Each structure stands twice: as C-alpha cells, then as structure tokens.
Length: 294
Image (tube, rainbow, N blue to C red; front, side, top):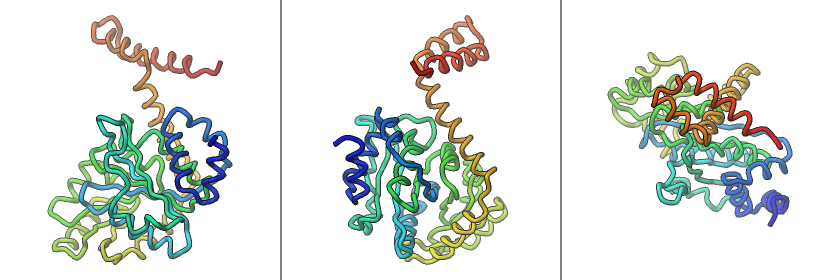
C-alpha cells in the first residue's frame, strides 16, 4: 500500500499499518509520510531512569490508568541498536504484554540507530505520526543509560525520572544529570526499606516533586497522574519554545555527525592544516549548501 492507504488503514484501526508507517519514518521515506499527515497534537510523557528502576512496569500501570479514562495510548520504547541488524534489540516490552490485545494501545520499540543521544532521530516524526492517528497520549521510554538521557526533555513534557530506594541513588542521579531535566521524580518500589530516606535525599537535590510508587501493584499511580496533569496545566509558550530549540539542536547535531565532509575536516585539524574553529565553520557552511533544495 502507498502512504495514503496506510494512513487510512491505520486510522481504521490497523496496528499493522501503523507499524509500517513507523518503519517508513525510521527509513528514507520520512518526509513523504510527514507531508501526508494532518496537523495534530498529543500529550507526550517521558520516562527515564537507570536500568532496573521499573520504567516499563510504571508505564504499564500508567497505560492501564489512562485507558480507564478512555484515552488512546501509544508507547515508544527507545532501545539501543543491534550491532548486527540495526534494529531494536529489546523488542516490544514483555512487561507491557497485558495491553497487547487492546486495540487502543500501541507499543513499539525504536532503535537509536547511531543517534548521538539516547533518543532515536526518528522519534519526533513518530510522535507527530501518532498524534495524527488520534492517539491522545504518547509515552516515551528511553534506554536509561548515560548522560544522553537528558535529551528526552527535548520532546517530552513532563520528563519523569524513575529511581529505586537505595543508598546513594539520589547522588548518582544528580551526577548523571537526570535530576537537571526531571519535572517529576518517582521513587519506585517504595515498599522496600530505605524508600522514605531516598525520597528525602532527592527532595534535597531537586525542586521537582518527589513521589513514591509501587508500580507492580499500581500503588501511587493516581498521585503520579495528578502530578502529570498539574505539570501540563503549568506549561508556557516559553517552555514549549525551549523544548523545540533543544530538539532542533539535537537533530542538527546528528546531521552534522554524519556529514560526508566531516572526516576530511577532522583529518585536516589532526594534521594541523586547519584549526577546529575554522573547520566547524566550514562544516556548517557545507551542510547548509548540501541541504539546499534543487
């Protein structure tokens, strides 16, 4: 089917068509798909945090709660790329399997495919597609590894950082830069020893609301949803512009990283034939020339 047919099939409830459209967006037909979409908006909630914190379990609980509100929900789980196939090696999250048969829940893993940060370069386009397909809420889960996770703040609002109880977790999160972009901080597995102390430590490290949660039992999910709603109500044009600016800069950096002239300029700097400032200027100029339409 062509793009128009795929969009029509997807709007009629075909998750297979939706998956095919996302595959096109991840490939070289992204612009073709985007051009065929009607403008639309959806709420985007970002979930990040270290491995094992319970991000997928939290998302599964949130999806169930939002479905009770009658909202259509899509989950984009951004995975590390397979070194062999370039695909998402973790696949669709097993812990979200309870929602697999719900036609109003769409779950998809997207590979990072060499993007410099923790987000795939196709994510902004995927969000636009899912919004156009009438999903009310898009939940974005990132890998949870390294400082690149702060990139989630460019496309999601709010950004929720999930942590576990434990000595030093608050300090480690601060060192990793996660608390700098956290709009809401959640201590998951709050039935474990040390949860209250971890929450107190986090309150000393961040001005963001700090909540406790037992995601496996859906305890605290209502309070988390209330915090998400409150954050949405407090959004401003200035904050939206700041997120858009970060998104543009991130994608521009990715384009420059793969520019064909970069290797030659790097060799010239390494050999002392050019300084890095001049090389950076030349890369920007050549990039602008390359991107000009015919």
